[in-house]
Image 1 (cartoon, rainbow, N blue to C red):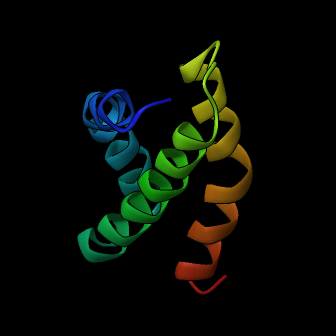
Image 2 (spheres, one colour):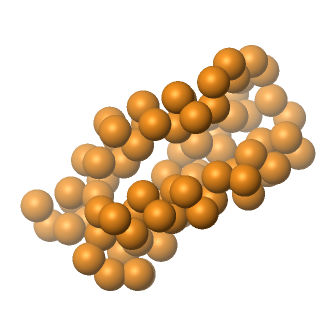
Length: 77
């Protein structure tokens, strides 16, 4: 995927990602950090591939796996 398309998708999904992060963290600063990390990883994955079939599904899988682990680490669990 080219950078322009990846940028557009990140902007499109940033509110959903931040909402997820807020639901998992205890404060805004930690939620912002988690959301930033999530968006960076998703952005990097966008740039690595030319054909993303289902963006929502890919994001959900990432959130369920990697982001949940990071949220627990940031929460000190």
